[in-house]
Amino acid sequence: MTEETIHETEEKRSRRGISSFLRRISNRLRRGEPVPADEEQTVTVEPPEEADLNVEIEREDGNISLEVDVEWPEEEGGEIEMEAQASKATFLLYEDDADEHRWRLRHDNGNIIANGSEGYASRQKAKQGLESVKANVAGAYVEDLSKDEQEESQEGGSKATFELFRDKQDKFRWRLVHDNGNIIADCGQGYSSKQKAKQGLNSVKSNAPGAPVETEA
Image (cartoon, rainbow, N blue to C red):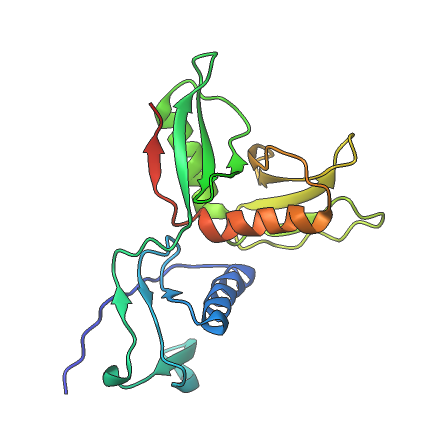
């Protein structure tokens, strides 16, 4: 019997970061969609309707491991894609009227679902800004500032936090704030309800990590 490792990643993550990653897998399984194995969502596998689930806790050489295996016969399906385009959005780099470099995230339906909150002196700096969003958006904790009683901030699965708030026009908005205090992304528009604002930020959470980057003419 031969064994082939098709994809493997290893990194240190906070408990909330691990939870966010596993939740993404859970959501895709529940919807019957291809499951991403990486943060960029470019490596995916599509499990069959039923599979064997094995959960194991081991102690070895001073380390404890929690292993969760999902296994099924290859003949029952499970297409593996190594260059999947799991995202339904695209990052667009462009120059504004002030000759500053900016980015925006455009959904396949044509809607702009996120913007960079500032202009950059170079395209390279703008790309670094959007890469920070890609790296931090999926595991970012959502803090609801529109509530009368504030929730205690929790450790996020990233170095950024989504802030959901109501603006002066009584519209609901979100912004993604890095731990250094910089706003690295915002919704660019006000929503008529908190639910729609949450739908907007969840779309960004799902689509930003794997979105390709293009340059607008």
